[in-house]
Image (cartoon, rainbow, N blue to C red):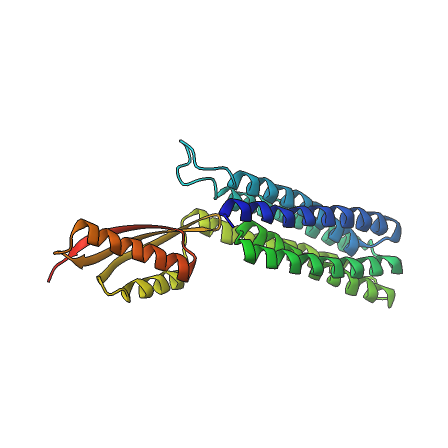
Length: 289
C-alpha cells in the first residue's frame, strides 16, 4: 500500500471522530442544560472543539496526499503536523474558557444537584469514546499518521474526561454539590494538558526535532555493512509520517563509482526493510587509511 493510500485510509478515522464528537456534543449540551450539570456541559464544549480539531486533521490529511510540486519538493506531508498544531490551539482556548467559567461558578456559589440522567450520559459517552480511541489508535499505527495519532490521543483523553464528569455528578447526587463543578474544572485542565502534549510533539517535528535513540539504531545498522569503514554523520527530520535521513559514510577510496553506488543502494534497502525508512540521502567520502 502506497503512502497516499495510507493517508486516504487514515481519513476514515478522522471522519469517525467527527461524527462521534458531533453527536455526543449535541446530546451532552442538551442533557447538561436541562439536567443542570457543569461537568457535562464542560465535557460537551470539549467535544465541540474536538469536532473542529478533527476537521482540521482531515484537511491536513487531504493536503498531505498532494504530490510534490515546484514549491514543495519534498511533498506536502507536514500539513498533517500543521493540522495537529492548529488542533492544539483550539483545545487550549476552550480549556481555559472552561476553567474560567467553572471557577466563576464556584466563587459565586452557583452550585446545585444535577439530574441523574447527566451521569448516565457521561458514562455512555466514555464507553463510546474508548471504542473510537481503540479504532483510531490501531489505524494510526497501521498507516503511520501523526495527525491521526493525535486524534486517537485526544479520543482517549475525552473518554477519561467523560468518566471524570460521571464521577463528579455521582458525588453531587450524594449531596456533595461542589463535586460537579470540580469535575468540570478538572475537565478544563485535562483539555489544556492534551493541547500541550499535541503542541509539544508538533513543534518538535516542525523544528526538525528527531528521536536520538532512533538515529543511534540507524547508525548501528549502517555500521554493520561490511563495505562501510565508518559512519561519519546521521541526521533525520520528519515530514508527516515520513522520516527523511541524511547520512555521510566513509568507504575504501579505491572503490569505483559504481561500487560506491551499489553500497548506497544496499543501505537504502536495509533502512527500508529494517526501519521503514523510504527516503535516505547518502553521501560517500573516501576513508583515509
